[in-house]
Image 1 (cartoon, rainbow, N blue to C red):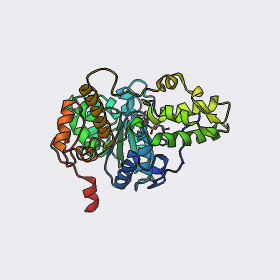
Image 2: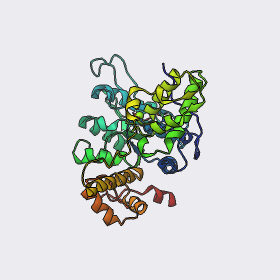
Image 3: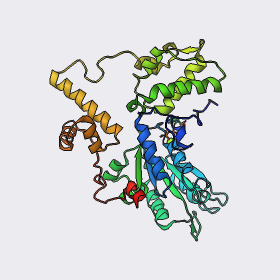
Image 4: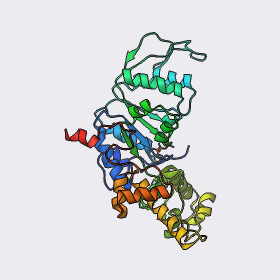
Length: 357
Ligand SMILES: Nc1ncnc2c1ncn2[C@@H]1O[C@H](COP(=O)(O)OP(=O)(O)OP(=O)(O)O)[C@@H](O)[C@H]1O
Ligand SMILES: [Mg+2]
């Protein structure tokens, strides 16, 4: 077994012990994400966590549970993408012996195990339409019926979900039920990709180096400036999980206290080559190259502000109309207005309003 990424490290801004596990720089976009998550943690609102693989969705879900009045109850996790329907349903809702081939005994479902606590349904975007109908019914009725059983049982569970798909797009393309989406996305929270929070990278790398050093019992002084600079040039498709694995590998292979680029995995070694014109490129007219650059800046700002048009416009010194025009021109999707637009016309409760009441 390899050592796991660290759990109880402190971050610069820590609204609660659970949230403190999410390490980040003070000016990181995560600061605001955590502040918002901390605010809504205490309310029984369903939260949908989105973000690429390895961005910390499960860590944040746990932190929300730990900061909620349900903290004394169970926090139960199910990966909905890993199982065929009958197994997933029997896992979640329970089953009676003989309900399907392979159901050799009565089984209590995870919803019942999470009673009084929180259930975290990971990879919810992978579920089948048939399963989505069943889950919707459970959420509407607040009760489950084990497979093969004739009676239902009441459950009191807060549901947190996560996906690395664009669930709104899945809804538009009719792959995910709109009614279930609104049930689950009571409060959507997006975790930005690691490449969009460059300030976090050195802090995480150093913390992981210290952690791996003690877990593997190998003394390490830290990363060389060149190693840090080259880590910053990688785009981290596996996000924080990939970074941890990379650092752990470096610590394991290190023969001196300083971790340098000679310890990089082949992927990192390739990606780390200096390229002064990654976005602008070396082809095209001045105008197309400037436009490519502009599109990249807007794309990055949209990701950083979780698609919030007003904030991106403010940040970049543009009007909202001007920003929308540029997004249209560059084919950048995913923006949303602050006041409920982007919700298909249904005005959801604004959690900050909920708090004011
Ligand atoms: N900000 C962070 N600080 C410290 N550790 C982190 C941070 N973000 C993620 N991690 C660690 O990285 C690993 C991946 O995080 P997590 O499992 O929460 O990601 P995820 O978004 O649920 O990924 P997936 O989509 O693949 O399920 C975990 O071991 C977690 O502890
Ligand atoms: Mg996860």
